[in-house]
Image (cartoon, rainbow, N blue to C red; front, top):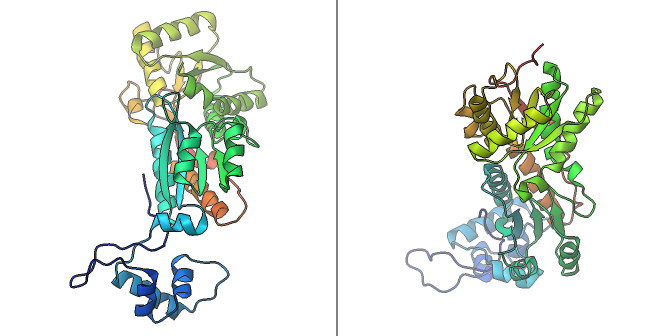
Length: 354
């Protein structure tokens, strides 16, 4: 979890020589020589209020002197919501990309005075309704799916924002997710090398497949624009024996395939190890391309070429959209493009054999 709460009555550790009595907005107002309303306007960054800068600085200085701290509970009573943003993570095998994404959103929200709380959605977790009703979040977003019934229930409860970043949500298809640009970047690189017959390698984990449709749409679109056939879809387990069997099957059933675009660097690394065991030269006979630039791709021979994703830029854009919507503005999620991706050519991709 990241961030901090919103400004309301609560005390921090009392300054030396003072009592432990709860510090209130009235105390700040008395020290600053202003009204309680002015204190509230300043500390809540109230819009449509013209407060002189000198007054604002006096209030902030008084709050710092008294070690005044916000009370999330008081803010909920006053506004009907907290400064919490609820992030929903699908129940997936460990994937560093989602942790990185949440970290970036959490940092950006903290800078806006909001707190990110993460909840994993799965058959063993609390029902989503129990989570958001307990937290009263200002916004809800997901790195996976939100059922339409949950969206409607949250909206009817007065929650301002409900967004799905991947997966089919009301008004947002998987094909519109950021993953599409990763598939497009993979396709662009393989096409530039001269490949026409391409496969995609996904993890058989159900959750990861749900988050992969946008990637497949991006790769398919890039190949179609170049007049190439749609990619072959192969499931590649994470263990070496399973990956070796999957690659052997792919080469047997689709001998024309000369390149594989992997879901991530872990799948790509598994394919490189499988190719070694099968005696398939990489990149001489088969090119393998990963995604996200994670450590497994650096532990292979050759090192795995990959598509690096600028998650910081992407997730800060998402956080800014959430903060704007919570403040009453329109919800306009950023539309990602390939400018937030970078191809790292490390030696596992090359032109197809002649």
